[in-house]
Length: 121
Image (cartoon, rainbow, N blue to C red):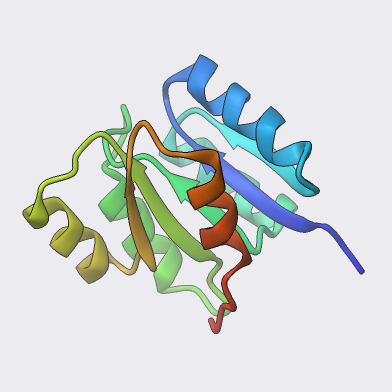
């Protein structure tokens, strides 16, 4: 069985690297991108099954990134992980193609559960 590949997209370097290390300890193969454009490049090489994406990225919003990724064949499962947690933010995440919207600080158990949910592209 191959490892579940997860691409973490967050401009908070410490948060992203800490999350990547914690998920790696739980059996996930993690890669980190600190902006949306790098994430778009990494999607081609890493081919993640899932992505954890912050909404407030420096070069484009996580919502815009999700729309771009969602237009691709076999898009990865996308989970928003953001400090933006009002109902309007969750609604925008759903409209952009995110399967879940998890508010920071995210509990590791919640992220692991979301990543392990069955996914249909």
